[in-house]
Image (tube, rainbow, N blue to C red; front, side):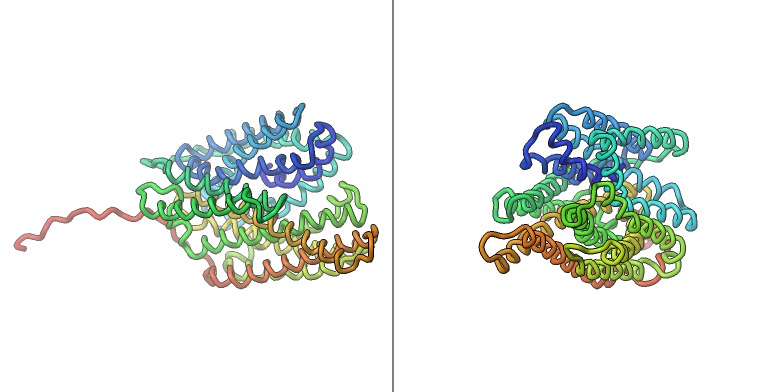
Length: 473
């Protein structure tokens, strides 16, 4: 539900805009409202799951997400739709870390844990492509409203399974909520996501972009300083300072920034340049979905226990980078089999390797009382990476297209020139994505420890107690 909702509404937006009669300027808020509430509340909701109990927050998140989806599907105006999307983000922030931390605390046997995180990684890697496929089919054959209503069916099944199959979860004893930390990190994430959203839709030079980015950065620095000094930190430093877990969080951030180029610009290329329908463009993503599912499961069950996370991250990033380089060969009249099928399969395989590893490594060795906030850190990295990628790659694409037209136009630009400029902007973005993946292979591969993950568990630092002086001293 959470991963699908990141992309399923993208294909429904034009239909929703026509039905509710809102402007193109307002359209971005249907996506931004979800991203703002989701990204800014993840760490708070992750810690809340540890304090209240993961089963409670899991079921609450499911019920709230379904209710918000039903309201959004029945929206009669723009305000109602955006409010429902913001509520979806709130309950999604409660649901995502609860689901992942349930896996981390439920499956302790190494083989079962590997299978569970393999399935989770497959869903995370394939969810974006499935969202495009589902969104295109629902919008074409039913209505854009079913892109929201579909969540109620998923939630009904998940609530029934969660109520019956998920055991009672322990709460963190004697834990307190770090209110100053919540305010600092939630405000910081809100400012960063809002700033990047404005940079993507307007310009980096507008105060609503650089001003919020600067404010968000300052709040996150304050948050990091505070976490090392408070007795009950929202995000204990021991969670992120472990090399393997820190490397996993950085990996998902860089992955989120680059993967945006695959979904958004490739869909633009297929629909605008090649003339694919929404359904056809979704079906075209199926090789990526299949390969990501296979590699996530195989990677976690066979590769991760034997080789550890470092080779999986390096191989996954290099596969994705190779897929991006291959995509730079597209043209205005490319064939799917020769230009798109191979790159999509490569990117799917690489994404599967990475997402399966990230879910397992990012929660490995975490004490049960930190499982929720460790899981939220993975989702936070992905959300922040996606926001950075949106702003950066949109800016690069617009600049590349403008310069191409300026350099090739002789008088008024022709439709053929504008199409060629669009393709040039896409290939430029793909080159940048390849560079991000290559940097990820170098940086994250260096940061992660070599070899298989070794069993250990974090524990809070013991408080020293005075010892009586020995007799005769």
